[in-house]
Length: 304
Length: 254
Ligand SMILES: Nc1ncnc2c1ncn2[C@@H]1O[C@H](COP(=O)(O)OP(=O)(O)O)[C@@H](O)[C@H]1O
Ligand SMILES: [Mg+2]
Image (cartoon, rainbow over all chains, first blue to last red; front, side, top):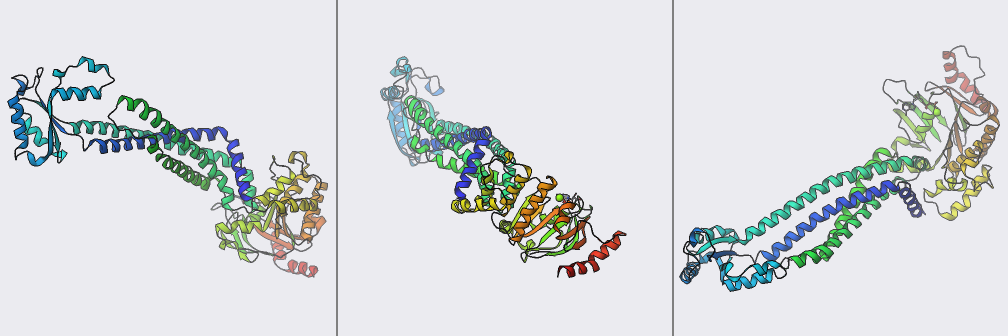
């Protein structure tokens, strides 16, 4: 009986404040979407780190015909220069720092390039001798990149030494920045959501002060009086959280695993199923925020 | 049933107290009028019984329990034992008569079958049988107050507090309401009614407690709205109230 009664009260409260309830739903929806997006970015970063970190290498690019670096004054790298570099890699000064290394010839480089950009017109404008041959070095400790760089960059026949990990780090730091920005937007939006929930509950309590006054006088418990209001806020916030979850899932399903993964074949994107892990967090966050802010509001504006 | 021991209530510091060291006992089953001019402290007296307000000093006992010692989560239980009606009825305008009375039972978790059984009984007691489906705006003032009384007593409280229940009603309708309150009192409910309607008090001849500026200046059994003893000055009145007259009144009661 009491449960039915409370449900009825919630229903009438939601109907009476429909426009406010809708705005609470929308604001929590937007704010939690940003929270979720930040979460997704972090998941994506971890996914890419796991995938790339043991694959990335330090590459020592050899000179080719078009090279302009100081070490390439004599034109394309010779067989002797290449053998010399290989000897250095196997020397006791360098060997302890590396796991292994491979030589990638110009022909192999062209093959990889074609694979990577298979659906891009850029392939047609690049020929085999434009691409440099390289030594691909797998470091024991990627942090020790400086040692390889210092040793090899001034050698004859070497155009440049590049640390692929640095390129990735730049991407990751960009993604980190984006997720911090998303959190920032989320924080502002959550603040709005809390204010809006507070106002909604206050209006709701005001428009029903006659009922609650009578409830108080006939000895209704605090819970029976307050619960309809609290649940009103919580239900609106949970609907917002569910909308946010659906939006994120759609984003992961149709964008990350659709368009983006077709464009970036080598990039491991998080799956839409992984995104579902975020949903309960968002729902709990929405419900918690709404519950706490309604409770605090009621303490001030609803005498029991 | 209700006992005030040296109760003082100060709302705002350095304003005069709304109640000034009031000591009073109201017994089970008694019908008591609380009279006095506006601002004399009648409503404050009733609010202290409900624990709507806290006494600044002194103790209020309801059914033997000091209300100051009732923790906030047990206050609803105290209030279930007390019915209240007001001058302005306080009905829910979008609920019909039956629903207004049933509301008081729903919110404390009474089952539907008990509600269906009890509400018509109570409506009969207050003289509203056949009007269950009416909306409040389809009722006269007197009928609305009867609904409010029905709601106040539907959970069978031991005490009924009425704060100027006839304040908005004409004399004849008021007498009808008094009949209802009297009937409820005959059934064993302790009734405390604040009023400044002299005709009613004179008609009913019940105990009268008179407040002035927060002080009890008269407490007489089977009394009239104004004391029958000629009053020369306030000091005389006070002495009478605290001494002889009280004794005489109690003697008359026996
Ligand atoms: N909530 C309140 N805040 C401040 N003063 C109040 C409050 N309620 C009553 N008072 C003051 O207490 C005094 C007694 O008021 P009240 O008990 O309402 O008298 P009555 O019901 O006899 O008219 C009055 O002077 C009134 O102004
Ligand atoms: Mg009053």
